[in-house]
Image (cartoon, rainbow over all chains, first blue to last red; front, side, top):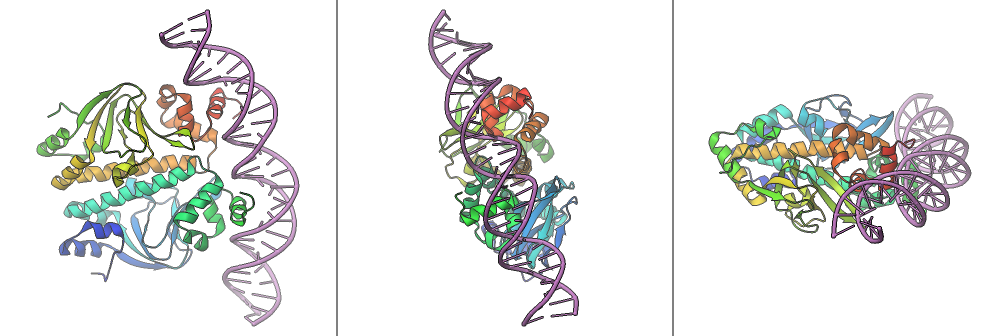
Length: 191
Length: 191
DNA sequence: CGCCGAGTTGAACTGAATCAAGAAACGTGG
DNA sequence: CCACGTTTCTTGATTCAGTTCAACTCGGCG
């Protein structure tokens, strides 16, 4: 069994018994990957969920030849190409470490086995998906009818570390704007 | 017990035993509401998930004094103000029937009880959330870096009934554009 | 009929993209 | 530790997609 603590709120809320905790912890594998490491290739099937202990990752894809950052996962959160993971089909999205990153991975197969054996882990999975929906809704709202400056303010408020740790170009595409626009907003050019 | 068939794929996949099916079916209540009926008031807590049997609904909110349509739920799909339902907190989003609508409602309390009593229903809940994520991701992708015309094509391809059954202004805000823009795209004005 | 909300069409305006140079910052090898 | 090339970021000028404002048309309904 791994010397493994799972600090995420979802895990704390799940209140697992000793046996379940053990089975769950055993299913996760630690990985240390360097900056730039590709955890999931664009166009491949995403067979794992990753929990970031230290470092950060981005989910990205190519759209009309340009690199689009779809999601950024910081410490204590999960990284996954969610549609691929859930459907088992390939997806254009890949996952890349943006810093040297320590993470814990669990495969879909193992997770589904745990769901069947331990209903409380199925509950954990449901809460994880629910939390994902809430986050996606927030992100969607930012994109639906707000200005570039508004989206910048939103990320400044909710996750300012992103702006320090992620290259400007990637943050810009994450926010759905051109890099030049983000540069100008950040400089305070009348925006 | 209701004479109740639940035609959604998620339900079929769940493979419930007779006892569970009964408990699950009993938890849902049928409602018939007229066009324009407000199922959830904007600013209120959404305490139910609705399954649309016939008719359609929209989830909407006011942003800077203008009405924004956030989601449209057709037959055989669910309508819910998801963040409010999951967090139990009020949300700006409300839900309105856009046609005379027959739907089935289940309360959060009853659903959580079922989750605890019937693990297979918890699985159903997990799959429902997962399906929701996949749909939101698709919607998000449409909004993130595509043109107004591209978003129109996307809805034309995936749910053309929306364009026939929902007033243009609501479809426009659903697609994140001004009503005039949608009108012009639809007319084929060079877009 | 005549009103009213919904949709259309036109013209002007604007936020953000694009195109194009430079200026910093970064890392790699000498 | 510096020099070099490469990538990232900034700044300016121009263009363009889509909004806004305004006028007009159409269809439904008292």
